[in-house]
Length: 477
Image (cartoon, rainbow, N blue to C red; front, side, top):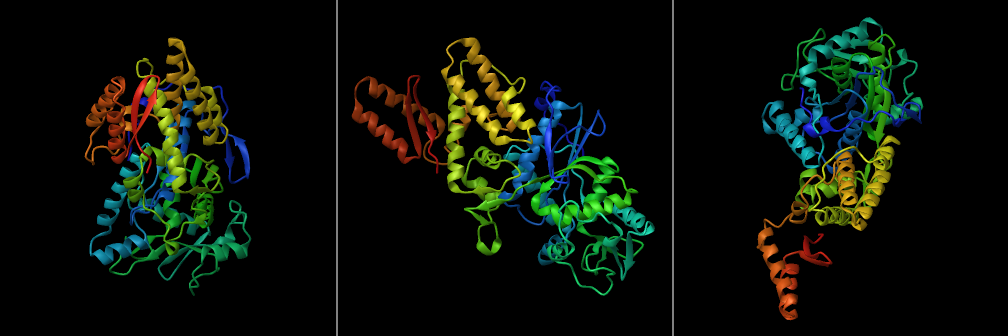
């Protein structure tokens, strides 16, 4: 499915002089990125399996690799960015059986929710959104090629990849055979030739979804889906493949094996990028610990932009400790940024070229913490600027740098008014009370001014007195 780019992305000036360096998980080193084809960059991100609402940890990859997509668009003539939807899977099947509905009822609902939640977090739509169920013929054809080449075999209605036919298996994850077997939680089955052989196609019983194939009615395995969708979108070799570090093995390892073998030895992906996982208060997210939080639940209690800032606050390759303190800190940071823009409301400025300090940080293996530090320095300079030309230049730089990170694109008044529509006071009423308080202070009626401040504080509104006058914001929760 093709999706149009936001007009603002396409209109930004391109940068071609600055080199882009990325950590390649395959080589375990930072390498200078240059596309295989000068006129096109191909990028694939592993998307969701849509059987339920995703958790906040699932959002880190789309957010950080969305920043990468914007960066690539500024440096190369054309980026084709694909993020798939896995819409056939055992968990989907089970949910459909329990609810007595077709799998499309499950996958359609949760794919729509995923897009909405990613949009709330400022994640741009991909150019392509391939669905596994739309690529069944390509999956079957790839299985047939692998069998013909001697890399796969059919047994009892299954098709399995023969791991021992690919000598480089394990190169991405750098695991020993024993570690890979343990990590894959391999199924012991009499039809397997090797313990590590993995399923490309499996039979479906009557109550399960299935498609006709040379091996009987069945459905694809998880790994072959991404290989077939990548091939359909980009051919044999893609420039960049992204996903969470938890997918490195077995999913990405298996993708490489089956794709390379299906394409006569051609490399599958030139660069592999993996984002680190989220921990909750220092502990790994786990359903058994009860510390897995769905995105819809987190969005209901925190500003979406603060969540986005939190997700890019650490380097993408490092683990991120998700705490209430982190979110509160991000709210305060955005308060400062939007406060600066509010103070510059009388300055005419728009998005232009990305500031060099922000761009160079992003070109250094997507160093978002350094880019955020550069943005803070721009905001500090803007607050001190005296001349109109400097104020306009710095406001433009702040907006442009914010755009590169997916931040600061709403009106400051909207940011500070967040959450005021559901209580007893709306933004207009708050403005009126702030004006009354200012009048009371000028009349030296400090008791009345203090009473208004307390009335607003009881409603969760903080007042800040500045040389430019009094202004308000919603207090951090």
